[in-house]
Image 1 (spheres, one colour):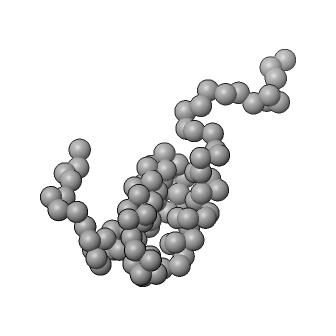
Image 2 (tube, rainbow, N blue to C red):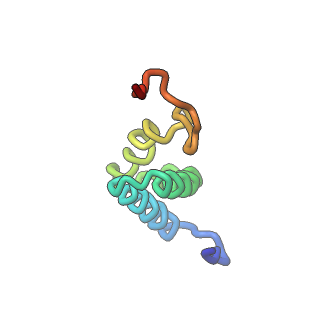
Image 3 (cartoon, rainbow, N blue to C red):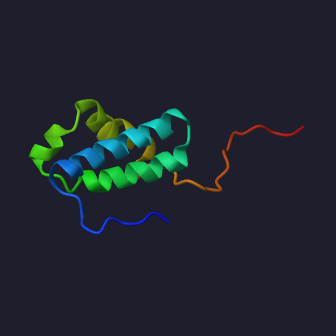
Length: 95
């Protein structure tokens, strides 16, 4: 397991860490690694929610849009959680 930092991030270091985590999540997304993307996105979102409005404005708009809107479409609470055992009603039939 990774070692947790001794003191929590603040200021510019926190903004940089949020940007880094969003970029990592996007790279997982581009690689079609949804489980890793979901975890990294959740960590980024958790840190993002601790930022002040001034700090949020420092994050590039492209990253903010991906984190808040586009990724919500695919990973939001309305989506089926990973590992679901549901089967489609109209799947392929064996003959």
